[in-house]
Image 1 (cartoon, rainbow, N blue to C red):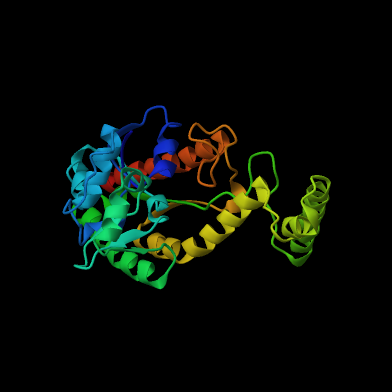
Image 2 (image 1 turned 120 degrees about the horizontal axis):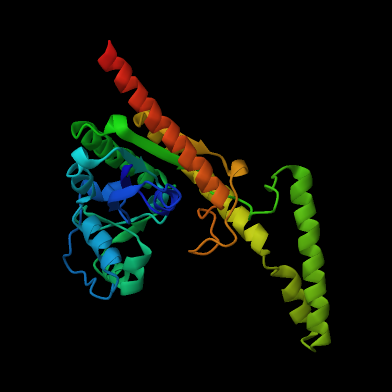
Length: 298
């Protein structure tokens, strides 16, 4: 199966569980906002990005060439996978209205600092400004896929962030669960306050321990996932309405992969989750093939 990707790790990792998949073109680190008004390389130095793949992705974003790359392979693709993971860090908007995606690579090489010095401001994911610009950019992507006769072969990979690591139950946000979390937080704070007193840090140190109780790893994952999924909801509704085929998994259905090769994150899933997504993708592609055969028979 020949695959094109406009998205990020969710789609790319899924392909690794599809034995016959060949990723023909992969567009990552590319917000749809950059499709309209790319900043290009003016005033930016991305020479500090040493990975050829990462540099290629960042330069593609700066030149807004992601859609052209996908469309240029239209005849060689069986399916295009679209996901929204790279939107999560927002984008930079320059005073002249041009944009670039706020990728980790740009931050690491210093280009984000250069953008700020040039007067750019970060437009955060989930804000009304980001969403409104994203809707326009997503329409550009959809229209481009349609013009390349790829929209009917596109699948929106609609996977919420996992709120629990594999082996754990999905956390609840009801009143009783939240009360239990506060009690456990107080217990941890009390233990730390006692340790502070034993270390001779005095009453002020003990009180600081009570006031500043760090969340557990599980609580941190849960908080990040619930916040991201809340911000994500209106984006996914638009994407599902524009792309005719969708594979969906809710946060309750997936878990964070404890041994994921890129490390545990709410958007890095278990092996069984990827295998399930792969099966759903295959079912859709097979359905397209059946429909095409039926149409020719008629």
